[in-house]
Image (cartoon, rainbow over all chains, first blue to last red):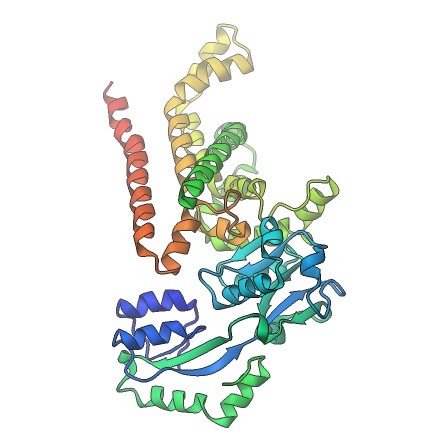
Length: 198
Length: 221
């Protein structure tokens, strides 16, 4: 199996223009749906993972267990993914609005083009804290630091869907891989990396 | 609306960068053109590096070096300037490095083309070193200055990778034209993306026409 990683929006544009991909593991729910409606994906999309949003800082004690730091504002820069481009950015936007702190934070927000870049802004110390994915913390956060797992009630679920693409319709391995994604072995792995399961 | 803000910001960034580069690049190019020092090779290579390095590499190093844990970040913080990433000043620093060869190299070529003779003649007429530079070298190297200004400005307008890495996409401070265009494309907003892309294409063509169009005319005259 050969993996190609990138943002969902970019892959959508590439697939529409004939990119030779067999399977898409999207970071959202809408893109596979749209591909299916446009007849570029023969199979029905299904949710393979549900992302979890975390407010994280490498500094110990900066982020409290209820996200109050967002209101007290003892920081200069808060990183997040661009809500126009990334599902985690959209979730962060919703969470801040729910907490009623979005307008007050306006001048202090820096946006990454993806959740990966938002993570990089925080990990490099350029932003003191930021909204990142739990899966990123599980994989690459340095020890220490402080984090708040944003309650699911604060944002619409980040449903990540997978779909078989038209290019992979005749590919048995692609179908089997999607089957594997639904197996209990794969689900255990996905959960261990910081996702919720459908 | 916000796209016009990005256009204005981009022009401001390109103008600031070009002025700084002419101030820093002129003495550097003069030295590179005339020195016999063994440092000429290494310094020339250093100046040319941004031509070769992917801008994201440059941007990543800048993010780390300018950040609070980096050597430059510690310096700027101890001077009370804060840290540079996500600020307009930070973009200026990144752009100066990124566009450096586009200003230094045309100037160096122009200075090298002068040769020793005009300067020696001026010296025999009693002109001092500064006088020789400003009354003889600069006017004779004028095409080099024109090319350096246009290329430095245009290359900064087209900058993307460095800004993406150290900008943070803040409207009015770091969201330049190329980043706004990228946002539109990624968000599948192809109509505004086409407007920006076509505008940049036309602008770039006109700039290059200004550079390439005037060269043969100069030779003919």
